[in-house]
Amino acid sequence: MKQLKKYLATAAITTGLLAMGTYSTLADNITLRVGAGHPLGPTVYVDVVHDFFVPEVTRRVAEETDHTINFVEAYGGTIAGVAETLEAVQSGLLDIGAYCFCFEPAKLFLHNFPYYAPFGPQDSVQSMEIARKVYDRVPALEKIFVDDYGQMLLGLSGWDNYHLGTKETWETVDDLKDVKIGGAGPNLPWLKYVGAVPVQSTLPEGYLSLSTGVYDGWLMFPSAYYGFKFYEPAPVYTLIGFGPMAVIGLTMGVKSFNRLPEDVQKIILEVGREYEVNSGIANNARQIVGLEKLKEAGATLQAISEETRTAWAKSLANFPSEQAKEAEGRGLPGLEVMRAYIDEVEKSDAVWSYPYKVE
Image (cartoon, rainbow, N blue to C red; front, top):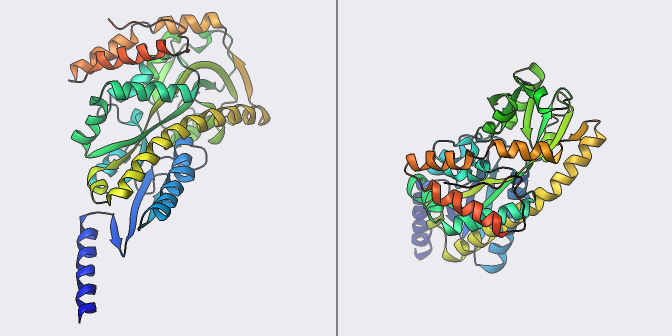
């Protein structure tokens, strides 16, 4: 009879937990759903979730606690698309989600701050370290996730160095005038200097859109330009060096996190920060591989002169201030964040192509 009562009590607890969301426990087993809108393979931040975060949490929970953990992985939009992952974590459809802030221009406008000051750090590890210092200096950035969207930031990730792929070879920036070029959104203002026509798009749309003429170029980093085979419809890849952008987050629903045992919580927080470090390393490595593979695939690689790069950066001199003031108008600490970012870049050994000031 005692065993029956114990079984019934366990079943009741398990049923209650299942009703609360996707997290469940049964005999110290934990199940969590983790997902992203982009697919495994060509997308670095998703690969680092799959190759590092998931197995490392699984290993440490098994070795360091009395629990076991199982992840249900859902990438490539199987549960939520690139512009739906924040909301999927907020609603509990996913316990943990990885997504680019660039696809949440309204909800996470200020978190895209690296986009607002391009032509700075060229190294992904350094870019990630600088962004982390800004988050530490301005706690409001992390507080927004908790207060507004019911989730917590476990770790940052990002894209490797942005360059420009096009269908046709070009020699001067004048050749880009009126050329339709795709981008994530927050980076489209970079095109104003050259007079190109900006088109907002996403990675999953890129190949078809380039092939059918929706646009004739892409603001894109090497890892994805090769991984998504954009070099087939647009074989010219020009090294510009807008910079790697730490604009991706790995977040977890607060309710899901709070239901976990404390020792498991501790591991997830620690591995989340390690995910951040590993993301920078992986992006650097994948950029090198991406450039090498583009050459092997027959893409035409070229580079702009330093004079052109400086002139391009100078054309964006007011961009950081404009975006900071836009954020202030939305009730966000835009001036504090942009000043902190520029300050942290200047403290590092990174060199701006043009020294930005936020007035």
